[in-house]
Image (cartoon, rainbow, N blue to C red):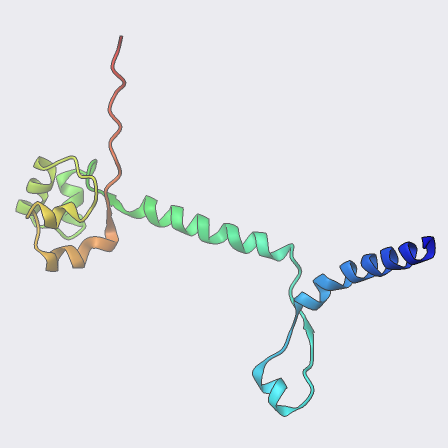
Length: 132
């Protein structure tokens, strides 16, 4: 009985050591049609975390480059493609919960919104905490 337990334990250890290698191996469709599949080793797991961090940085960068409807000056809004009248309406209609509030509140047309929506964002304005 002891021998059986030792053998099964050894097999379990060996099997667990080879499972990740099997998961990392891949084949392509052309390899399966042409003949026996050729297995290749996938990239090292250490490279994956570095790739995950880049999209997060890009997302943060994109948001920081966008013009905030709740804090931008009229001149900044004009630079983003709004007319003088639209910029004034935007400033007067603050605060905005979402950038599509511009269309919902009839400040700009849907066509104008489609032109500028990638360049704008509406961050929530934090109000000061009430003093006791």
